[in-house]
Image (tube, rainbow, N blue to C red; front, side, top):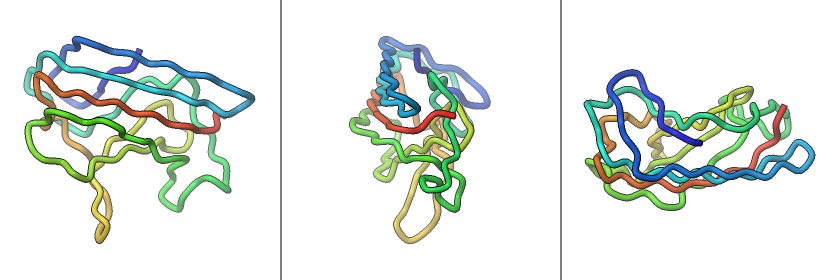
Length: 130
């Protein structure tokens, strides 16, 4: 079951769903989360826990150490606008890292303080497991 992880505070959920299919080393997954309560969340957000740790295939790893990008298909009801919300799976990890990206600069961690009591996040990814 997917959930958010961050350094302090907490959130409650009205819905959490995760599904995956593994064919060989390739993992296809979806994660859907709907928040229904927040208590001062803060810190960089990850979505935990992936069913298998990501590999570090040299042909798929970028120079920043990420194995694959994640499709963030639906995002609603954040406490402030985050039009460049993205997610990545770091090499060797079992989580998705949420970030804010801009096309003219690097990325920064998406802070949990943007989550609200009605935040909805749907995403999917395909990656190679170790």
